[in-house]
Image (tube, rainbow, N blue to C red):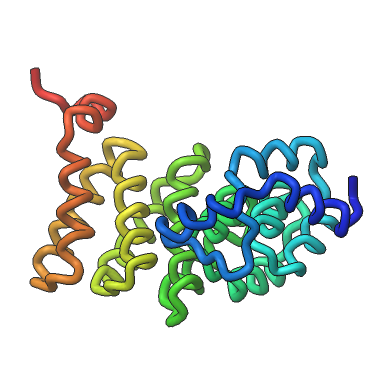
Length: 229
């Protein structure tokens, strides 16, 4: 199953035009979308299997669900820095951004350099990519050193005043995931959140306050063995 036209026809066959309304409600760009639930795209991805060449071709179609499928079947071992740059420039929807980061980009040797490059970018979804990579790394890269995440915290602090919806949510996500990674980073993330509050910037306060609520929750404190009984 590696014919683009056939795959696009398969996508159309499982589309639900009414689902487009729900996608739009959640802030997804539906300007070139069929209206397909993610689990159904995943099912098709399992039938196809990993195929980097097909992944690149599907991306080039520009269709939302084809690009989603591309992130599922791509081979992260074959992803280049140039591909990361090209796809990131194409992002126009948070879900595609997040899937590409989690399924492919964060697993490459380039993820740290791309964090530094993208997190201070001007374009909304390019900047989001930088912070989504931080969050995904904190969750999935178990062998990554604490020093990597410590180096991300000053960036989170300096960029917290960016109030664009898809950026601030990614910054908050990155801060929360770093703070939940272990007890050492938990305290440093709390310090970062407090530093953000000290900026007296209303735009940044939500990021810090929301993160602090989670850091101080019984669930997180118990995970880090910080809960006082």
